[in-house]
Image (spheres, rainbow, N blue to C red):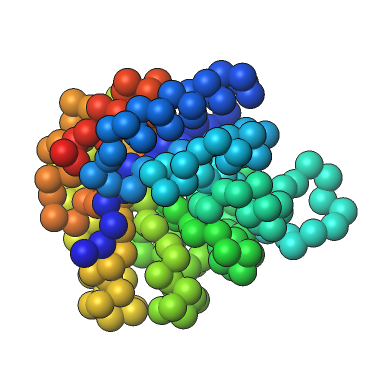
Length: 252
Ligand code: PEP
């Protein structure tokens, strides 16, 4: 049985004090009310080391939102995968459309980041998804396939087991516009089929594929009820414990 996951992506929100307070609240709530799924919080770099000190990572795992495409050295302002790992984090989000769009992260750059993350023992939440224009042109399958081929299909099957895929249609991120459960299921099933073509059925069946894009407590049950949707990557609704818990409870 593949892992069901609800992962939060805090993006550039929460100062250190507010972030610690939110992580403590989630830690306490989830330790007394155990979730029926894996829970991950991905936070800005500056929060990681502090949160790792108190988070029970058997219940909530910690992740970063990015890492560098270089191992170490004179890259002012960058944070390496090794540094992320040394904080106690276990995951890193790579390929988010905001990184691709605003920071020019190409498939080649992402390929390097993925390799370095895996080399340093991090698991990767790898984001893919089409723009509104691409969806309207019926190109969504082509786009997600190219994104996988460009950055993760070079991995061995063994390495690929450390990848969680997040399908995030760009037109649904932070817009309040969610893909319908049927639209999401259709493309999740397609993504699983191309993973199967590349790595075989067994790996495809074990790969968690999360949906992201305006997912909230009210629509999570319908999305998560679909056979190929294994949970969510949550932006806005991961910033308040009650909202995030509402989504986690969709697995109950
Ligand atoms: C995201 O950016 O990963 C995301 C899914 O954002 P939101 O939930 O706010 O749409």
